[in-house]
Length: 342
Image 1 (cartoon, one colour):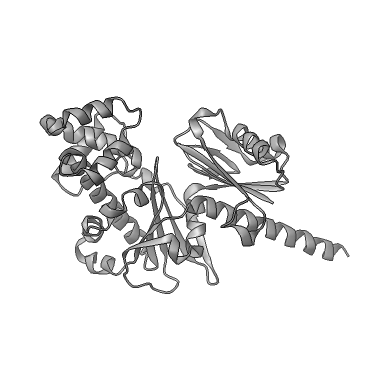
Image 2: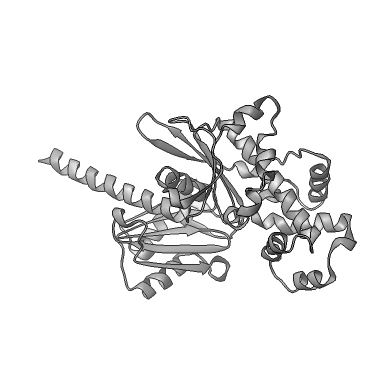
């Protein structure tokens, strides 16, 4: 049995799996608010006590770079260490992988019903695959063909410099530069960027904010979901919320195009994370693809790249796939070692 987890700045999602053939049928699942706990081990103990199980191995994807089996989460004050988790929780083996590496690991194994098509494009067999995942932060990863299978590669591309594509975006960057030492794409493309974009547009046209909506926002600790919901359902009555989402989608499309160009993602670009499924109608209305393909001489090439939205919890799936693959390799290695000793 394996425990797998998707460890994000907002939520920690854990699941138990009885075997590799049952990755889409976990025996027990639970989501926890990450910031209510002092660390991952505390959450795991609560989860396993509830489930009444003792898995042999674990694999967790984390929102941050993993080095030497250790990870400092980007949007959460936790240090997670494979060796420490083995010692504290009694697992035989623990694997930590970057959250976008986990999503990338799942991408080639996703089924048709777990995807929504934004641009059908033309798939080049064994072409590189790109993954862009806006959630609490902005994750980026890619996959390259090794000759026999796709190999997932993590990155921290979401922290690259934000490059405005028009005068309004340039003013947004100027506005954010007054607040942050570094204005990255994460500052404008993560789900957490929505309130900042809204605030910028409101400062330009204060009268555009409905008074009743201002009161609702003031009562929210996290106003992003309310702004997005208003943009999707009450756009004509709330033009400020609609303009916020329009600007957000344009920036996201431009960065998706940047990533596709950098790795020449002729196998396709996949939008994962919490935001894309939530704003799917706005990703389908043409604005995203206009920004995605607005790359001058390479517009025609980008128009041929398939673009899909991942509707499944790909991070958790990828962590489970990775964990079982590691368990399989460990078992094979042990068997081979016994054969050599004989």
